[in-house]
Length: 266
Image 1 (tube, one colour):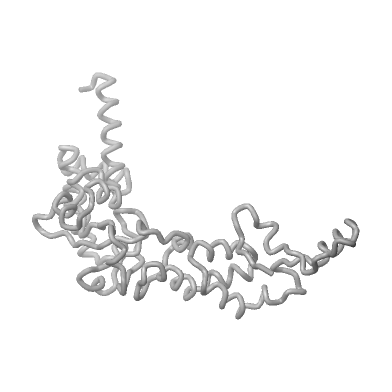
Image 2: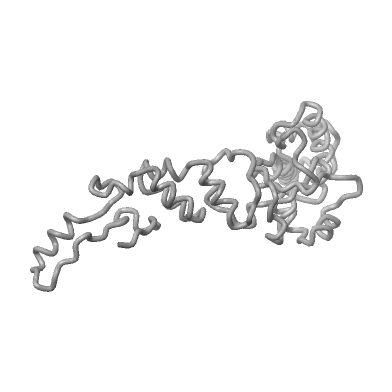
């Protein structure tokens, strides 16, 4: 008997295999009856191993993260075992030989994909840093840094405490500790690697102190003011109507500018 994990097109027929193989001398009608009565399913009380949590745990601990996600779609019992934090983190760490994963994602879908794109290096911005210089330092593409950090231009570097750097080689993850963080500017959850020790006080970008937050707001305001080539009041206005999103502020300003040109106001 061979057990298979659920697939995208096999959820209704999972583990449906006959326990009894009919002989050639049996009629088609008898074969149909035996097959129907001997069908195995996760909810079949005649096969209790498939709903035994201890057995499921032993099996699920050996599954890669994508198969673990599929197993969680079978039934409630399978889902409760597959969503166990220890099993999920172990499956997430295994391909990259990570030492530890710290933190909990805000969404369970975080565990479904553990490709290399899920990881990033945290680089604290220092005086003289630029996107180009960081691309050279970490041997990555400028556009990859911009894309990962949701940057509309290099000016955005001045409004941030750090930049996320794409991980190019999986070797850097071996025996390392990664922190699951929701980056405020990049607007994504990533497994962050700190090359110079862990984050101070385990503060994520979303939970910085009031002082750091005020400094970040001033940097955002300065970045938007320079990008729009306007004064502080106008930059502050467009940030207020876009909930502090620099990219949306630039888009809103461009819309108003086009409208003024079309109506002949400028």
